[in-house]
Image (tube, rainbow, N blue to C red; front, side):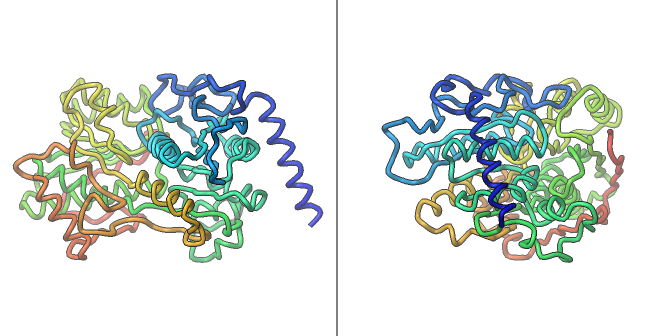
Length: 432
């Protein structure tokens, strides 16, 4: 007990020290990480991009500085922490930031965000200390990289609500068990390794939106597909394997299994670089790949660069990425395999405000389809920006979603091996 109390005191002292060094207080209200840096939030050397590399509280106008005499009566004070990227990544961080910020403004709740000073578990945990010291009692944490922070910090701050998006039992166990973890979550009681009372975790059924994207691509006439993943973590793999299953199903329906093939590779990192772009140049320029599903943070930049040169196409991931992808060339994005991050953030924050935290605490939800209406699901394609065609129209997409929701179309989430397909699939492993 004494050790626990001492740990809490030390954590509080560290957080106070970090805040005193220039976090989201009133003197720092002009700082921002919206610096137009690399889209994946990382420089070429992998460091977190942006001018706020010191981990200060960012987004000056949003900073909850405690001295604001217009603060609302609610006791909610929201902070969002970025993972290895920043709020301009057109993916997890940006969607979580924009949705949390909009919800806070609409509900007159203080909001700020923090960017860790490096891509490490220690830096993310330090940002938790900083956010709590700044008054936050609801933490929005997007991405599996926050598992260590949840394991370490939730028990130190029992009055703070941790919302860990895309963090699953396996992620928590890897950090909680440490050496000796056998990577089979079913062999453990995950709640023994973190303070579940003040934590809500959720993951997404990526294989479903991956399936939709692969199915759509083949129905739209693309016969030579590519999948470029970031690191081969479970979420990326589920996207990729779903993509292959969807392409295979569409090819079978059209009777063209022998004419459709797919190239499959992971980059070994979540950002593009010259080596990965060179591999994509070969795919588009030499192998004749027509469309690449780029799945993994900012790694899409390499696919985009190569596609522009070869008049190829790209499929986005996590959010509707057409805006940033098409900035390189109009009409470059076929579609995006999306997760319902915005829906999750809105729903959870609304229920916290309504006093329904008990509906979430201790849960690790696996979010997918909840309706035959595409817009209501946690996995979907963007209706407004998908390049519909004669082979696959919006009504065809709606029919596909209905069939998936009703169980007429099933998608495997097994990631132990490449799915068996009638189409040819070439797996190149990892570029790095």
